[in-house]
Amino acid sequence: MSVATFSLLIPTLILFIYAWRRHDGSLRRGLMQGWHTLLGVLPLLVMAFITIGYVRLLLPQEGLQNWIGPDSGWGGLFLAEGMGALMPGGPYVVLPLISTLHELGIGLAHTVILVTSWSSLSLLNALFEIRFIGWRFTAIRWTLMLPVPLVVGLLAQALFGE
Amino acid sequence: MLLAGAAWQRGGWELALAGAVGGLQSLFLMAPLLLCAFFIAGLIQNLLTQERVTRWLGKGSGWQSILLACVSGVLIPGGPYIYYPIALTLLRAGASLGVVVAFVSAKNLWPIMRLPLEFALLGPRLTVARLVATLLVPPLLGFLSQALAGRQVEHIRQGIKL
Image (cartoon, rainbow over all chains, first blue to last red):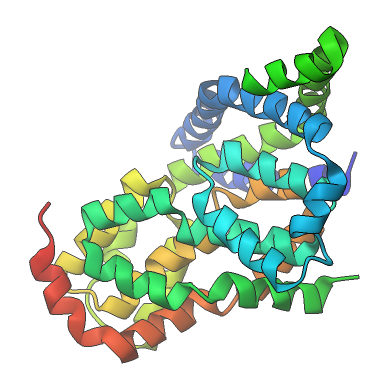
């Protein structure tokens, strides 16, 4: 069993026991809901992983590393932020893709920038935000958020890089 | 499909099949992890209701409200269809700009529902690196937006059309 599986089992067990001790059916409902979500996104997951199998085969590793690898300099960092903002779709599609790019050798900083930029500067999300709350709010949040992925990526690299 | 075509063109059926098989193989390897991740998501969704969050975050703009907004952002389940309407309700209920920016940023950067999936797909090191590096971002963005543009909140409130 991998470290990741093991460390996910612990919160699962804690929540399982907590929900079970409430005796109000939240355990059964919670498990069913998780199962239904999984079944609901399963076709998406299968497609995402097949796509990733192809990306891994077809993407020239050297080209990728020149563009957005650990030695690509500032250009690569900005490219990662831009790519993150443009990545369409939810976590089931985007996270497997980013994990593949990481396996193909883009650096820690670039991977962190991709995740941060996709999750908080996503253009798709901005459309929702403008629709619900208005452009003023989005403009303020975006302006403040714009430098964050770069800073966070470099910080992660400084703290956790090899 | 496009990728499969590209693989076929480059390496015939063999390469086209290899991509799909490779992708599905990684999906099977991830299956126990994904199962845990989805059960965690389902259980949390059942243990936390939206009214609970809205009740926590009534009025106020001090550091306590901003920290509370961060916690709520972390805990609230669901995609943009769910949390932007909540942000809207918070604004209408009198929450300050900083509180709403902190809520949205925390939801984007540390959503407890997405973390198990991120952990499963990107691995412990990357997830921890990203979480540590972004630790201060949501409260900081909350404070900054409040200090720099807090007065805009009335304009934002008036601009809400929904």
